[in-house]
Image (cartoon, rainbow, N blue to C red; front, side):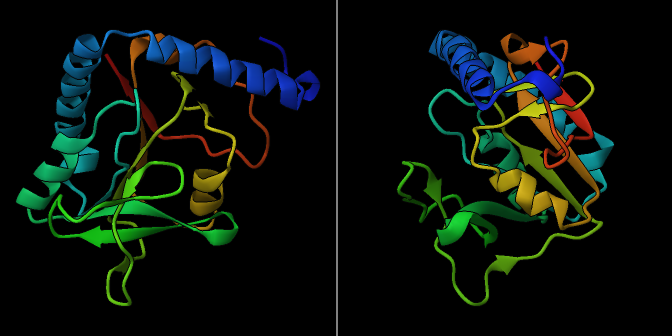
Length: 189
């Protein structure tokens, strides 16, 4: 793969299409089995066991499922929060107390309803689960192009960020620039 210095926006868009098609091509039963394996691996990590709160995305389309992570975090008495996309390209995390009451946003992604008392601010005791279209084993991430996670995490200090993906989404290298976050660990199956 080329260096980011000669990678155009069109090249990144083509990579996104390629990895979305690869992920979409995994049979749904296989995706489900792999998702369970990935989630169990996550739940066995010190980064999960030793944290007080978990930021988790709600799986959309063919993404790695996260239901077990959210359900276990709530059962373990941890604070669990899901993303909420606010206008102007801003993302917030909203505390949840159950897995019900989510509504579809304009992207078709289920999210919690924000209220004054449920906006969550992560800290050094928070572990984040981060989605992506592709990851390298060293934590570089190809996101969806909106920059939501990059903007959110560049301003916050957390315990750990963990990327979840299927083995088909792993690459030797991912083109990144100074605005792209690098996750601390990638879990795949």
